[in-house]
Structures are given as structure tokens and as C-alpha cells.
Amino acid sequence: MTPERPELTATPRNKGVDEAVAAARRVIAALLHAGDRSAAEMSTMADRLNAVADHLEEHAPAVEERMIDMWRGEGVTRHDPVTGPENALAPPLHLHGRQDGSIEGVVVLGMPYQGPPGYVHGGVSALLLDHTLGVANHWAGPSGMTAELTLRYHRPTPLFESLTVTGRQVSVDGRKIRTVGTISAGGEVVVSAEGLFIDKQLPRPR
Ligand SMILES: CCCCCCCC/C=C\CCCCCCCC(=O)SCCNC(=O)CCNC(=O)[C@H](O)C(C)(C)COP(=O)(O)OP(=O)(O)OC[C@H]1O[C@@H](n2cnc3c(N)ncnc32)[C@H](O)[C@@H]1OP(=O)(O)O
Image 1 (tube, rainbow, N blue to C red):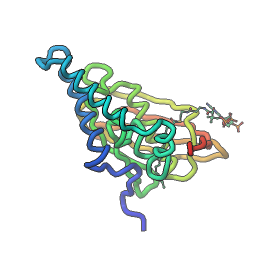
Image 2 (spheres, rainbow, N blue to C red):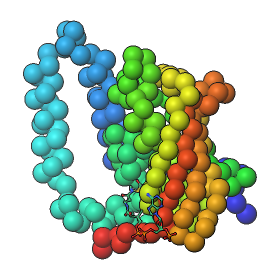
Image 3 (spheres, rainbow, N blue to C red):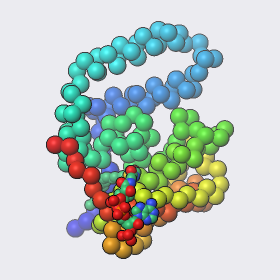
């Protein structure tokens, strides 16, 4: 039996790379909060962060090897820039399936995602919705690549507040898949999206 709210993205772990990525997200946000007005010694900070990067690069597998690994099995939901627990750029959004065939996730976006003062960058909203519509297609059945994505920005999308992101496949006509989605804040739709996806899968590296 399908669970009531099946997980559609990788379950976050509090160890391994997920733990290090969560720390990296904190660093990104903390640097932006600190800015040049901070009392912290930034050239020391840069040396310490570069030392961490040097260490990681030294111990990482070859890119080709890593590409195979990240597209294998559940890996596909672990590296993307929206939900991926292995990707420090991902807020991350965590998506669940709903009983009516649509999907939903909740996220709070901080300063790294800012556009206008105090509000989310429009391109970031587009990123969240493109990905969410893509996952909604996977959840509903046929899926594909984004051919068109139309967004309507109804109201400014607030930072530091809980946002609900939804996606729902509405029709499949041959290879053409139409999917819609929204971002809501305080129960009000702030961004809505309509996407045309074309059923096509690129080969996975192996
Ligand atoms: C059990 C469930 C568990 C779920 C677990 C979750 C798993 C989740 C896993 C993973 C989630 C991933 C989520 C990812 C989300 C992000 C998605 C992206 O960012 S995708 C990257 C950005 N998009 C591109 O880079 C495309 C670039 N464009 C192309 O590659 C091609 O143009 C493509 C594929 C779109 C179409 O090319 P052609 O050669 O295959 O097909 P042609 O013959 O051109 O078109 C087919 C039909 O579509 C129409 N068409 C094509 N493009 C159109 C357009 N832009 N507007 C209108 N019609 C278009 C054409 O007119 C044609 O229609 P006629 O059959 O003649 O009626």
C-alpha cells in the first residue's frame, strides 16, 4: 500500500556528505549575513575554507566516475540544485506525493535566494517550480524535458517565511506533457507556473 505522503526526494541524512553539505549551506548564509561589516577576519576565513576545498578535491573520485554514481538508483534525487541533500546550492525543498496525484513541499528561503529587498529572486522561484513540475511528472507517469515554462508572479515572495510549492500534471498528449504548479505564502498563491514538457530522456552516464 502506498504511504499517505510518499517521499519523492531523497530522505535527508544527518551524517556523511549530507552533514557536510548542511554545514556548507550554513557557511554560505553566514558569509552573506556577515558581509564586509563583520568583525570576522575574512582572509583567515578564506584560507580555512580553501583548506577544506583542497582536502575535498584531493579525496574526490574522477568526475566521470562521480557522474555515473550520481545518476545511479536513488542518486538522481540527491544532487539536484532544488532538493538535493548533496548539493549545497539546494535550499533544500523536500517533496511529497499527495493522494490526488499532485506533489507538495515546504521550504523557507534565506538571504542567499534574495532578489528584491526581503523577497525571493524571480529566477529562484522559476528554478523551484521547474524542478517541482519535473518531479510531479515523474510521480504522475510520463516525464520529460522542459520545453516551455511560463511564470506569473502575482505577489512578491517573502524570504524567511514558510513557502508551499506544488506541482500537478494536467495532460499528456503524445510526447507533450502539460504541468502546472504554484508557490504559496500565508495561504496565498504568490507565483504560478505552466510548463510544457516533451517526453525525452537523455542517456545516463554509465
Ligand atoms: C514513482 C515516482 C517517484 C518520483 C521520484 C522523483 C524522481 C525525480 C527525478 C528527477 C526529477 C528531475 C526533475 C528535473 C526537472 C528539471 C527539468 C529541466 O530542467 S530539463 C532541462 C531544460 N530543458 C532543456 O534543456 C530542453 C532543451 N530542448 C530539447 O532538448 C528539445 O528541444 C526538446 C526535447 C524539448 C524537444 O526536442 P525533440 O527533438 O525531442 O522533439 P521535437 O520533434 O522538436 O518536438 C516534439 C513535439 O514537441 C513540440 N515542441 C517542442 N518544443 C516545443 C516548444 N518549446 N514549444 C511548443 N512545442 C514544442 C514540437 O513542435 C513537436 O510537436 P509535434 O509532435 O510536431 O506536434
